[in-house]
Amino acid sequence: MTEATKTHVILLSCGSFNPITKGHIHMFEKAREHLHKTGRFIVIGGIISPVHDSYGKPGLVPSRHRLTMCQLAVQSSDWIRVDPWECYQDTWQTTCSVLEHHRDLMKRVAPLGVYYNSVQRPYSNSPSTTPVIGQPQSLSLLSQIPPTSTLPIYQNSNNINNKPTAIKLWGKMSEGLGKICCVRPHSDRFTFVDENANLGTAMRYEEIELRILLLCGSDLLDSFCIPGLWNNSDMEVIVGDFGIVVVPRDGADTERIMNHSSVLRKCKDNIIVVKDDINHPMSIVSSTKSRLALQHGDGHVVDYLSQPVIDYILQSQLYINTSG
Image (cartoon, rainbow, N blue to C red):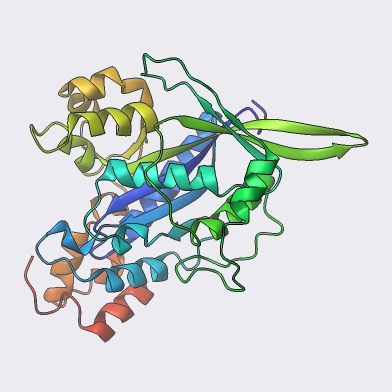
């Protein structure tokens, strides 16, 4: 497959990130590596979306700290960024709403020369209307973005001039994503058509499918099987419309998990399981273990958290005098 025919992917991870660990970053890296090896996908970006303070989880530190720790954890990454939208809402947002928000935002923040159209959802019974948004609409939407000379505070500013085309596209979108808010979107996946070259008087366009996939561990996948925990319609949208990339933890049996849920069974083709080494040290790292290590003064915390995150935690006195 050529680059243009591969599906371009943005990985979105939702969670507490209380605190963000090396395991979270490892999950992004392994997922990207796995997707690239399939030959069907190109990962052009990753988004970390920390949960709202009102989520109600015991021991959840304020979002201002979690956002800062996340930014410190990805400060050396040229493809993962932290998005504060979820934390800045009036109340807790469902995972489905966060996915739809980012999909809608990416439809609205279009780099010049990029076109979008909707495609039929794989599990929808209704035909697609496939509306096409051309350059005039894109120009109009861009004009709505407030002018600014600086990048958003939680966005990486790494130089992307020498990156491949797909990464440049992500850089353009990423800058715009931090500048506007949006409303709840429609539930159609969509496609990029990227202006690739100027061949004399004719313009050549390459159609690029862009998907946002939810990146998670097997523990989140397992939670889909708990009766009443998830709204069934939300599950249909998350797994059926978007899709999931799962990085198993602690040797979890993802096949068994998927067979325990009718939604997961129906949408099995939309679930990508990353074959990670169960003996890899990052496969057992968790925020819970990190908090316990901090509380007990355990030196192994350096195996769980990056040094900038540890320094911030100690400076801010987080997790030290709490339990769990």
